[in-house]
Amino acid sequence: MGSAAPRVLLVGCGNMGGAMLRGWLAGGFSPDGFTAFDPRLEEAPAGVRLLRELPVGETFDAILLGMKPQGLGEAAPQIAPLAGAGAIVLSMLAGVELATLAGHFPGAGAIVRVMPNLAVALGKSPVGLFAEELSAGQRETVDRLMAPLGQPEWLANEAILHGFTALAGSGPGFVYRFLDALGAGGEALGLPAEQAARIALAMVEGAVALAAQAGESPATLARRVASPGGTTEAGLAVLDHEGAMAQLVAKTLRAASDRSEEMARS
Ligand SMILES: NC(=O)c1ccc[n+]([C@@H]2O[C@H](COP(=O)([O-])OP(=O)(O)OC[C@H]3O[C@@H](n4cnc5c(N)ncnc54)[C@H](OP(=O)(O)O)[C@@H]3O)[C@@H](O)[C@H]2O)c1
Image (cartoon, rainbow, N blue to C red; front, top):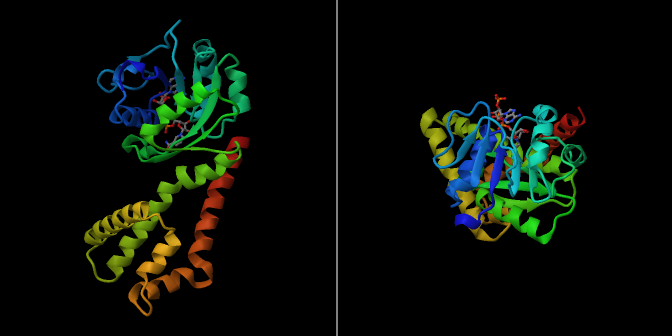
């Protein structure tokens, strides 16, 4: 991607900041475009500049806020001078609203909320994005930065970030539970536990890969694999009885979304 790549400052490079950095490097961005400021990080990936203090008088195309949300108030006064008209502030701070961010960074060229999950490191995360207004150039910079991380999804309003967080941010946890349940179900049918877990993972990986390239809805795919009177149909009847599966998942996402709203208010 070379020298024209955006210059990015990561303020806080822990679990999520580090995962995004790995995603950018794996996606072909040159490491010399990245500066990580983090008091704790011992080592940055090769070629990435690691600072213990914020730089003074430098300009960046994007400043990624990667500390915990509680740390914003204390950190913001030092970051604000770097967030000038040429800089886009990217905030992944869960629950911190645009109005609050705008109060901290009044001179920023733009402020964008970003909601990733850890699969950014593999370029496989849906990334929720919301901004009030962006110029075409700013939008292009954000799209370019987000593309190697997975699937950027611009959202229609800020409140939808709660639902996005439930689906895409907490989603991996729900999938892990389902995987666990599949493994346990296999074990109950006589397969050794480790083998059942391995089979469940391989099966889900294959099923998801097929769904991703099928171009048809999951409902259609489920119908197609369930021959009348067959084994899949017998199992689906249990999941579908009184909408059991659909209701459980809807309730699960609702709980996560409600918690996200609650955290934003506190
Ligand atoms: N993890 C996820 O799945 C996920 C998903 C979506 C959004 N997020 C958001 O991502 C943010 C970071 O989460 P995380 O899990 O990556 O946390 P984390 O692993 O604790 O990383 C935060 C890093 O920032 C450092 N830091 C703290 N204050 C700083 C400051 N003022 N300047 C520079 N660096 C500072 C921390 O150092 P110390 O440990 O010394 O404080 C730590 O190394 C949170 O706001 C969270 O809401 C996380």
